[in-house]
Length: 57
Length: 311
Image (tube, rainbow over all chains, first blue to last red; front, side, top):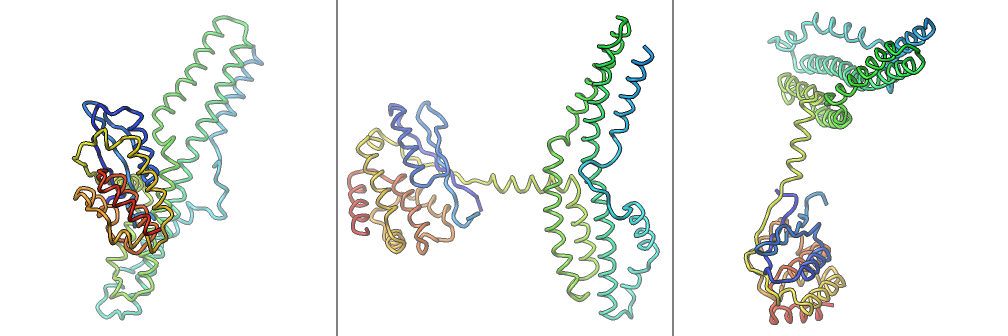
């Protein structure tokens, strides 16, 4: 059983970085372990790591 | 000149002597070498294994013989392990101190001596000592790893000791000698560098185990619009305020249809379905579903209405 789950989302390339940063903050607020931009071309790729319930908790 | 060489010899002597003793390890109240020898002698002479497998041996005798074997082997392994651990700690410490003192002595002699030739020779020796130490340091692969390996070995030895201690309370049918010998091997292996490395590798592998879920829908400008993000932010605040019952109820009766990819994330993240009974888990799952879910007007309005009525 995995210890964490990573979600990978693509955002339109025309979206300004500021809005992507706000998305990162929303994911952290929602309980993500961490969230980061992995690629910026040709689209923003936002990865977010989430804990698995029942694993080390 | 004579005095200088005497000084030099004194420093070299001090450097050599600094390698003696066991820094960080208090003297044992027994002689470990002697004890190991005595135990090995007893262990080698006994016919315990023959006694165990004797056809007429009753269960009580077998249990007694098996436990004697376990006891003696554990004692031997422990004595050897203590010496093994102490030896590695000593080698590095004495090496550092010894070379530092020798280097200090040579540098002092170089400064104090008059002749240029002698200075050159002594300086060359001093740099040789420093260089040797650096080379040893560089290649001393235990330098940073030894404490980690020892901690892992100690922890793993405790883990592998448990089946032996439990087994010893059982009869010889439930816990046979062959099983005991296998557990003893595991206990011994736990106290080796190879065993420790394997444990570290296995643990880090488990920690690194991650599942990844790609969400294929490309997020648009509308998805990240300031007004939309503000609504999501407000929904997250609303979810935080929900009681345990309200949160678990809302998780059981979601106001929107969840995308199958996000549903997969939900199931991977909460395989035990704790979200239906645990308020904390329910709140966290609801927040994730809101953040990752669709952000069209219909879905946002449905979430807002559901959270408001649940408050």
